[in-house]
Image (tube, rainbow, N blue to C red; front, side, top):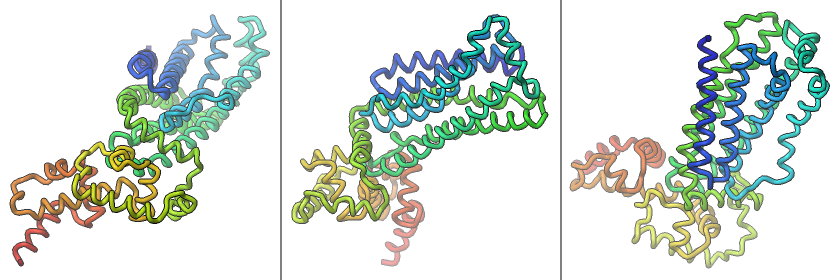
Length: 395
């Protein structure tokens, strides 16, 4: 048994295990169903590749026909997982059945072969071949590539939009960012590109076993990465407060809220919030920020702060955008940066490490702190401390 076959078999078994474990561990998170189904299908596809390499389909050619079209379902499932993860309130609708049409069309196209006697199916396939490969499957391969890349591209657009809007609701975004899903999507895209290259080489007459297999290896990588990272992320998105905040992002799109910066202000033109009320909320917000310092809470979200002010999250978001020109993430972190700046300039706190001061101010990671601090000050924390010391000495 070759190395690739062993890898395919292990990856398939691991995928089945992760699919079952995900459903058991995070079954209350609706999006998990799509991830589990996706892992299950990837595992079936890997097993299909293994069986095909071993030439075991002569005994069950109809099963081969059924499994060969299953990759037509993986792209839609990948997209649906991302969509339901960032829109927790959404459920499958009748119109979502359109995602299954390509596979149904494939099965109908294969129907004449299904109706043949079992021993005649494979000879019939190879009777109409191209470079020793059945023409049916050559056409299917090109369809698979186009369809998969289309769905994965749509997934990246969803994640890009989410990445921009999560800053409207969270003061720390490390836990809820979907960078891991974006990266996995890119790995899956690279797998399909490898599959495309393999097929281009095939039709070019370069049919060498050494040239094929990279797409299978990347498929195994995707199963492991998607399973384990999805398992970790599902725990975060199952948190009731995180769920409530992400539902607010989805609700904005249900209201067809525009996204660009000039439109952020324009969208409130028909708001029922009067200028006087908005001014009152702004004063109340500044008073709470100065006296109660909620920015110390690294898990602070816009809904939580709105509840503290006894106003709706939508009204708080409106006040922030129209009165400060900042989203929630920048507004809260500006207070955190200001506190760290004061602490760095305080001679009584010189013995404290910069990171300790950052965590005390409400930051939850070193990387985010350094990035945000430089964004607001144009300096690194160490440079700011040195600058503050020089100013103190001159004074």
